[in-house]
Length: 219
Image (cartoon, rainbow, N blue to C red; front, side):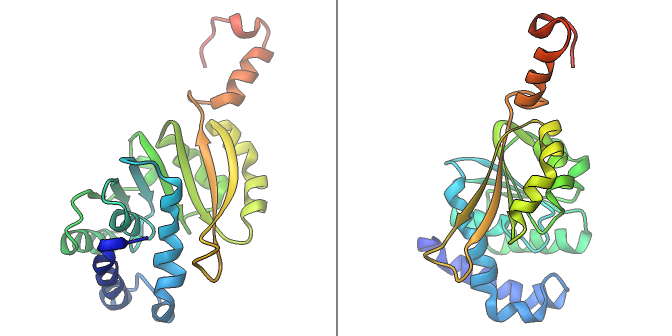
């Protein structure tokens, strides 16, 4: 996964176990399972990210998965979006220490950020029903939201269908990654953004209006 950049991943693990726990970004109990539960758990997302993609990691926290992706895939341009000062400061220090030139740290709420990314990632940020509008709003048409979820992924996806539809989701699926590497595979809800705001479902609604697809009314 990390190849010749494994030393960078090890250094990042040291920073998480040290400054990360000291500043309260990671619980001390997580240190013994940093690799399986955090670094490798996040790293397998690279399977779903195209070459040279722009990535926005919202609510990046300690840099999971954003920093891990930047280490594993130097071709990516990764924006770490984090509203809290102490977390944003830690992320900036990590990016500088590891010389991750493809990483940009922005201290802001996802709701206030403007951008158009190939991939938007989120881990332990919010339920999918709340995440849908914000995350898809940062995706370019045809881009993907990769929401890392646990056992409730299927339930969350079902509950979030109305919000995803309204936000312009064109396709949703549940992906399980790293079965041959992790003790517990990583579960990801993958949402593909529609080609226009409102997505495929909005186009269908327009066809069902009086006047159908020939109507001149805008959204």
